[in-house]
Length: 226
Image (cartoon, rainbow, N blue to C red; front, side, top):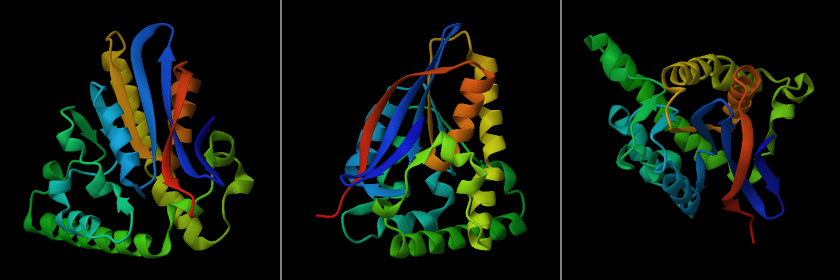
């Protein structure tokens, strides 16, 4: 199953619909790239509005004002997801990866989170400067779980650990809870997370729960350079 396709025409993301023969609960996977053309995020938003629940990566924008400010100040035709895809405005309930409001109980907690927000803003700036989505490789389920595919450098392994190994289990647990609570409901759940997390999602939903990919719709993330 391929989530991101990199080719001579540019970078594309596959919106994948997973269905189950024994339950009406449907999962819609949105493999995200966090810097893209605005049209990509507009197309994701249009499809996400048809869901009854969204499972989203990150936190609400009001908790990360510095990152929100940084995301809105960009150059060129590529934009940041944090500014271009305001999930809170879609009219659909959103289950965020983290809820800072529940954990910030002291002045120290607020200071730690403000520091994290500032670091996140710096990361957005660096990513914008050095990473072009059109240079990203394809992402598919086989590659993501092939040991030979993982980079050997310490930085790449650190990114691998923080981006997938540390966070994938929490995402899978969230989807499992949604399945247990809503399996009998006619419901569409949109999973709007980075493409690197989708192999873990499909491994669980398709492998453990018996879901099958019924359709895939390709959206253009960024057109190739002219």
